[in-house]
Length: 211
Length: 218
Image 1 (cartoon, each protein chain N blue to C red):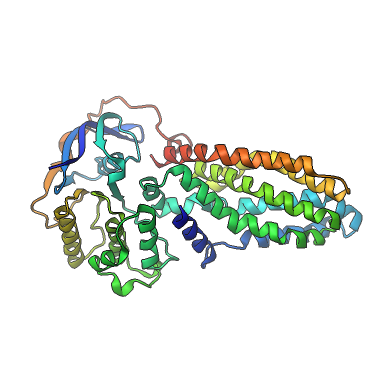
Image 2 (image 1 turned 135 degrees about the vertical axis):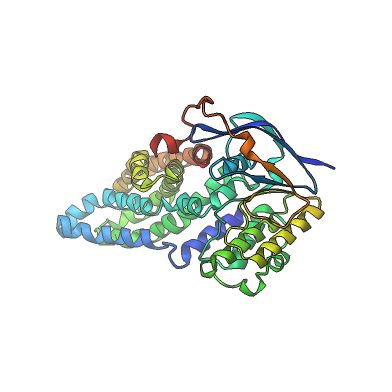
């Protein structure tokens, strides 16, 4: 099986403070890895680092940045555009597969022409997840993908993840709830919490200097 | 890149997009000035080039913080950063969208506003040429300011302070070209310098703005 992501001895910092350290895992095609850990331990920071949005404090990540599709808490939707327009835009940017199957997979066909501003929180989330399908990228990096989804939609999402894995994709998911993916491995980040005495770094971003 | 341009133009022209805001602001500035300095044609004609350029600068500034702030708020910027599109390309496209929705309408409407300010008819052509060559620099420099302040609370004010000084060369040469035209002279030299400034900013600023965005996204 092709290894898509390999992480060695990774440490990440948030706000100049080390959050987690010593994390290592590999993610092969067809695999899902679920990250667990209490609020604030640094799951989001870890996922952003794997997605290439911020540099690791220590360690290294071997992954093709063009293989990763990242989905955060915010769905990146424009309220003034319709559901289909939002999706077509991301498809054009990523050059992935057509939007109709993605709409169907997330049960959004009936809403396709509705402005995204009119959607409920759960419907927005489903549209955000449909975006993953049109990126055509093999590695999904998902941050709390099931927030505001009802039980039926969670099952729909789990089905989409399973289909993605079956197509030699991979998924790295931070979540608190049971997704109904018993085949997924689980990595508990609680064991990797950085020691309180870990050296802090110099300010890492403009936010800290000016914020 | 085309998809991003089309999306930004579509968003600007839909409800709440702010299209025409800069133009309306420009119109108000040009109608307020005669009330302030009095309606004598001679005085107005003298200050018209400067007023028109300062008005264009401020009209551009109005919508600058929307370039990246909206995409940052809804998470699109994170997704664009992980997209195959290089960040520099995204900056260039978003600046272009800003120019098409703000700078281009100013260029088209400027002769009408010139009449409001008694700009001599000989200078109208120079005004349009100067705005056409100069306003792209306003948008791209503004994109840099917007990239630096994205994610800051009340970043708009800080951005104005950062960006307005960068507009000084464009203002000097742009207004000079129109002033020479109004005096019946030849404004080619300042126009060429204006075009040079625009080309230099187009070449260098996307890299600086993309760097600033990457730091701000961390």
